Length: 128
Image (cartoon, rainbow, N blue to C red; front, side, top):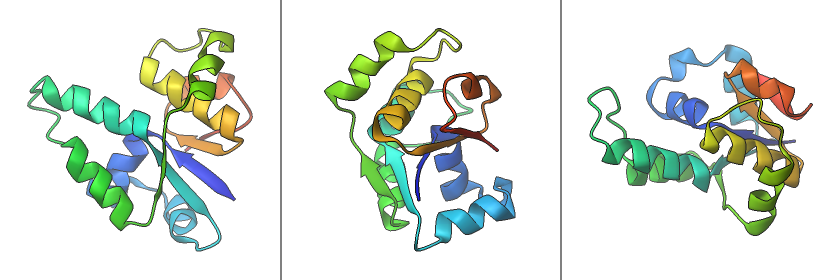
């Protein structure tokens, strides 16, 4: 099984694992599951970090390294993912979430998120 985790889940895994359900925590540690984090998530974190928001203390480089240290696999953004955006209905306006959904669809991986609005895109979207 292959899972792509959204940005919020990635941050929870690294900084607030207590927010994960026991079932998801177990899946993320299962050696038979390939867990991906996206370059899109790292870009989102970099942009939010650059805004200097007091409620967003995360640094992109630190999160990327922690994800690698957790043995998560990096999913780069490629042209196929970008082109898929043209076919997505506008259920959701957040460009980062739309890119993550496009990646999941193009790669055929389960996309794990806490954002219920994203379920409308695909059966691949799994809501916590």
